Amino acid sequence: MQHGKAMATPLSVKSLVLGLVLVGVALLSACGGGNSTVTTITGGGISGGTTGPEVVISEPSGPNTTEVLVDSGPGGGFSLGATNLPYVTVTVCSPGSSSRCTVIDHVFLDTGSIGLRVLKSAVATLALPAVNVAADPSKGTSAGPAFECYPFVIGAVWGPMATADLKVADEVATSLPIQLLDDDATPAAQAPEDCRAAANGDLLSSKGALQAKGVLGVGMIRYDCGLRCQTGNYAGGYVAYYTCNANGGNCVPAAVPAAQQVQNPVTYFPVDNNGTIVVMPQLPLTGAAIAKGRLVFGIGTRANNQILPTTKVYRVDPNPANDAYLYLTTTTAGNRYPNSYIDSGSNGLFFEDSTLAGHCSGANGPGSSWYCPTLVQQRSAVLTDAFGMQGTVDFSVVSAEVLFNTSNTAFANLAGGVGSNGSGIFVWGMPFFFGRSVYTSIWGQVLSPDGPWFAF
Image (cartoon, rainbow, N blue to C red; front, side):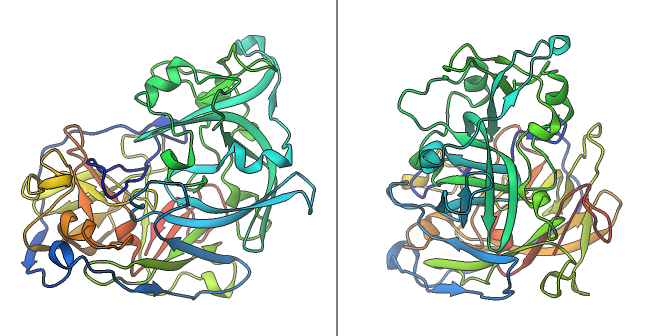
């Protein structure tokens, strides 16, 4: 989901399940265009150990906006500080209550996943009601409280479902199904082996592991699983939902109606419910100590969230049966990446490029997948949407060693590889958001033009 400075492998957050299908990796031969130039790094970095400025953008403002903070993470998180992780603050309340509430800071903002997921310990005083699933003999579902296994690229979260009211800025989502991330030392309901396998054995069950107190997923879908979880047909993939007995344990796969699955909280807002805009400041070459931007709810619903004339819309394929489902195509430096997506939950730009690999040393190599070019790589990419519309995006790659040897936490040019099976993937992660306003529409909500699409 994210990456700390001293760790050796970059991690991206694209959830393994979007809508109705698993995200796959397409292996295609390289072709196409794109270009690159290089410039020399001067100052700071490994020898200077500099700290950059705090960079802030305070507009748009309004009741449908809140601050996005990129800093070193919550207290008690990764000891050397987080990198490129955007956080927001949320208020979680018992359903229908204005007094039984708790404010949770450092909730990870993720445009690539769906739903609110918070540490169970953070809301323990609220006694949130459980989401209970009715027995369904036709689908083999036992009655009981619902639990979920939700894998990300770097691991999975496990825990019970609950109902809560959520407030972000002045936006309120009432009776919202959420997931509580079970951070008990000895959970009553242990994660099943199938969940551990989907997570590669790595459960994100603490603030330190998560580098956050929760996740606010505001991606393109209304709920986090869809048809396969409604029918309980988990063949060929991991089991997402379970029912467990009242005392925990004895968890069995369950079919869960769409309305009881973890929901995109934006769709529960009364008005500003069709998407989000993430607005982040432009950064210096070697980053910033702290970066502050804005999260705007709604697209075209108020004066402060209109689509500007200079904004280009990139539509994605909405058919889950297609390999291109929710993807764009990126072409750069002679390589073509048909499985491309824009995601604030990935803390770098991630793509395979043999001309950039293998240059890291010390703590970030040689096994590191971060890129450490000697010279700054100035590149241009062509983005193509599912319907053939194209646009150009300029980006740069600076040595991860140079960046990590500053005291900064926000970087606009941090990049790394995806791995041996990632030749067709290009992740436009958090570096892409700096210096831009990035729109993420929600499929099925009222929009003009209709979603799903990204825009910037």
